[in-house]
Length: 321
Image (cartoon, rainbow, N blue to C red; front, side):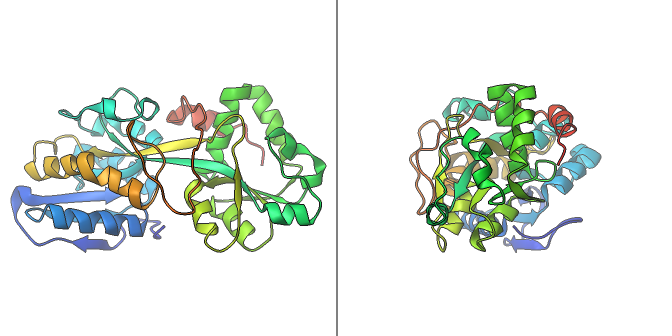
């Protein structure tokens, strides 16, 4: 993902200039290549508009929209995580004229202030050949990872700084109950050699051979690892933790013809294009998308409440590591 710790990153691309209502400013929390592919396609399909896209980090984007509200420079917010979309909901327009029934129901919150754009699911990934070479059994469940035989072989993304790591905590809280879930992670920590600050930690540990099991990787990360290092995914009974990011309009901007044109394009073309090129996880009820090296037939965990920011803060307050 492109680096941007403060304000806006450099403009990715800029369309042909036009005046007034033909200009659309998009704040995107997506990674560089995905931004470039989408913007190139918009310029091809919507040449009548001056579409400008800026990369803005997730935290910065949410903070800017909270502070600036409807006076924001942005017309459209793209790939902002569901919890932050809920947080800035007073600044977002109610979207009209779209059939929300085409989307998977667990991605919606009933507000009609965003279109689901991307489901990002996660997994426990492992170097099975490395485990077998050491005579260590390949784990088939969360509880098997508590076996002392895995001590020092597990890398996990820290939930306090990694959304992917938090999604695993939330998933087990849903399936086991809060007390049992935190007891589980207390035991798992005995086998974890590293709680990394981001989801890239387990990725790097697997690639470099520092770990044999990565706890808290996105499927997208696994697909990238598999281009060079053979990594396998185990689908545990609880299913794959996930989150959603969406595309929304800043309130007051929805009447601009160019903004409506871009959102219509997202609904009809852009969201599916992202599934076909980058993250094929299911967003639409009727969707058939596959990408090489990307795990197939994912079973998704029950993530009710994953967009609740207050609940997230409360649960992370109990995290010890």
